[in-house]
Length: 590
Image (cartoon, rainbow, N blue to C red; front, side, top):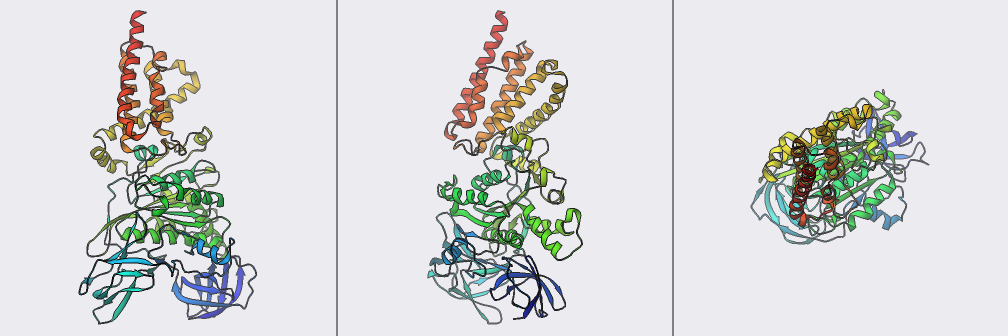
């Protein structure tokens, strides 16, 4: 264990001399208060350390001690339902030990050493195991069965296994390797956060991550194991959109990272999630959620670690064969932490002061997402979907973090402040957003929902695009200059925007829409368009078609409960048909 002394302090950066025996990315304990830090640069015997706690009051000459181990997370039963800070310290346990304010140098194990878990083995003596094989299971919560895995780099023959109640550090299995060495395996393992966990094979994403958000599922879908970015200016609804995706996405496990965002936003998450009932399980949402809270008033260097802490935990559950959704809010704050540390290290700045390696660090993070076949004898299938919010200053997505992110991710949900000011939420701009998964996922939607799903999606996007072009004409010469078919396009596009794309996150019914309901809502709007088009050909008046009473029913369709959507759809189509026939009859009378 190498030791040195502090020779320089610059905010979260501490330089220590006498650290020749230490390695890059070693975790160190700084000063007598034993603050946690990580070596990020070495010059001879001088180590530059980013400290994950407040450094005020430190002085030169104080001791620095290396643990000779990289920054790692503890992986085992007890992760689900927990709230950690950026370096996986359990905030609730710290509160019990040190009060409501985070004290410096508090040492609390990430996973409780006192809690008892019941372990059921799935292997027997004499079985040969390789890294990634399932030793047994622990019922962590009512909805999550925790699969205890053989650590990735380990293999051997089971020479001892037992069922019973254990703490996470107790040995539950003895694995004898080829050389005859006996290794005790417990319910817990450690993994360095900056190193992606291994997998057998990465697969192409071919199934959607169902979110219940119409703008996402129907228009700009994300694949299970895919990557997406949500850039948007202040107040455009990034956090609420991510909350919605975390609440309703059809993932087995949700990992939510509050990275540098305001404390009150994280408080909303902490207050809401335990009370929310998961529509997929009927239990509390916290029973399948891991929260990492590193708010804007917490040490800036810990933001950088929080992203890696979160994705390592997510990879662990992915390796069990689960579908995991990771929300990072926001990667811009993480990039700001990189920029601050880079400036203090006196590195040559890149664009807007960000380090030259910003793009490669972002790519390393997003590349850990994916649809994979896990290591292990049974080759389980798992998926890790990553959704990162980006907070460009002033909403300008030409800035470096947004541009670097867009070069990596496959889905871009661009939030628009003008839509937000009109109270159109989610404020995803349908003209600038895109999904590169849409074509490959179209076959899945056509097969599992309705055969004409992609046709309806294409027609809706075409109508919205036509509306944007027609809107320019209207602004110049007025609505009266448009032909009746173009007027109908404008009316239908308005119905798409207001009745389909707008979704109320705070309405108990509208907050989540099943794929069947989304399909019927698209069908209802387009049926109105098709029936009115035929009526126009028969000489109907566009003014009367635009105000038929059944349009109100189309607008209210979003508030119909799931069990009633099929019957309500039939009623709406019949009402539209009756109203149009009435308009045609009035024309004939006239």
